[in-house]
Image 1: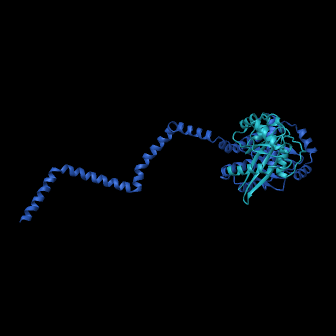
Image 2: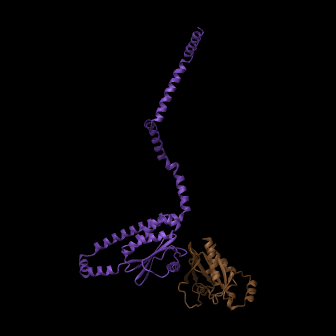
Image 3: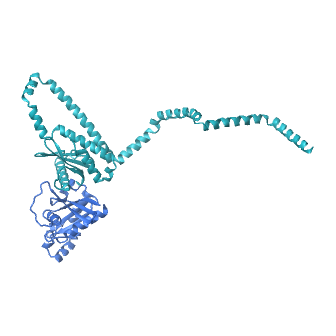
Length: 273
Length: 165
């Protein structure tokens, strides 16, 4: 009987609660429902992506348009500082690329000039030249006297110390050749008083030494045979390719002589000029 | 470790720079060649152990009475300098202080060894007196003719460069 009276009491309290908190309970129920929805959205990748993607997209679009004004000056300033700090490395990296571009431009201009000259030559002159030339003889002579790479030296510009080398035949001491070449180079460059110009070619009888200067180093290539403009062009390409590859590699900074020697042999060893 | 170092040998005319190098490199004494572009290059490798050596690339510069006239491009990238004077000829060392300042301006912090050569021509006691009177400090007194202290000079320089490499 007492128990029945207690249950009634509880029921009464519940009824009272329902009356007093009717509005709140609807509100709580709504929040619970929303939370449930939110949880399901968060846990479901597809639903979450659907909700978030447009926001990210909008933010990215805004970032794209605002980046030149907001981050632009900071990035430019940082780049300028880095270039100033590592001037030598930047020059070293750009040298082969710029060299190739200049070479291509000059070759293109010469081709245009040559075409122009050819057009201006009279038909009579062309016929005369054609009859006078002995192409077969010339081809044979050219083949016999073709340029051949005998030796390649990678030399430190200031000290004249040999850093790496490749040689087809045994020659006199390469360290001493490097030193003397550097001294001759310095002497000639000093003699003309032009610090911004470099000695590029030394000729002696049937041999030629092609010199290509970079920032810290220069490359000396000893060639035998007839060193034609065409061969010179190919040698320059080989040098630029080699140096471009070298500056990209870790060997360039650590100067792993053995590995650079291998690379020299690989680049210049079987070069067909 | 095998390293190469550039050493420039310089000083006034006829102080024995070439003879000093020749004594060290070839162990001979003669002075019968002419320089054409103002420099002659030789080399010698000094081995400290099986896998440790220093190759000295020796740049023998043409003598000059005025150090300020030395071709600066020949000094570029040098790792060590040997300044030679003739102990029997005071004109070659009387301006030593000034010469060294000029050299320092051209080479910054490259180590310099000061060497008085031709010790065979003078009396050791008299030489000491002359040099101290003139307040000349030096690293070595050598004789290319007899070989006195020549190897020690180059070996000490090589060791120093190997340690700093």
